[in-house]
Length: 239
View 1: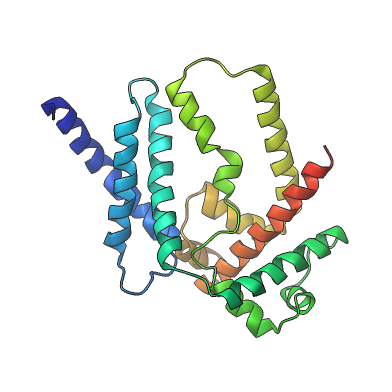
View 2: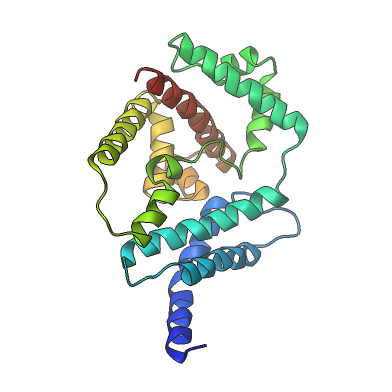
């Protein structure tokens, strides 16, 4: 291997290692049995190294860094999904919860209580909370993907040609739809999602800020994501 290339990769590993570690601490809310933090950091670094091998950093350095971190996070989430499985029973409960959310939104009820959602889903509040905890490490829909399409990002790195006007219009429409959907969330749901996705706080840090348990913050986040998914679908049907 060329010594300059080797030196470059070593420098990138040093630069990204603490960032990937931060991603692990944010994404892995509950560490799966027989795994530790370093296991997931190494998985993330492997995803990042693949990005280093596949993309020409000289074309667009900023876009490359975003792409590399997406690949690192994607590798971590893939590993997490493979080892932190959800039981069939919990999946069925979550489907019922999602269906209940959708029904309330169709009725223009934007602030249905957890008890109401649990009742509509045909379960006790205890079963509801248990199902939500089962999703502590997994998102039903990724806001990252709603805002930043990985395929388009890769194309931007590999092809510097300008986007067509139609692409810009479609992107603006998606952002407008997402904004309208976000505006229908409750304040605490919006605050939690904002802190988690935009301000880069972990669930633990958010819990300390809003003075609630980590479990409660995870429930709020997951509920908000389920709700947002259906709100976005509703907004798209208006087009």
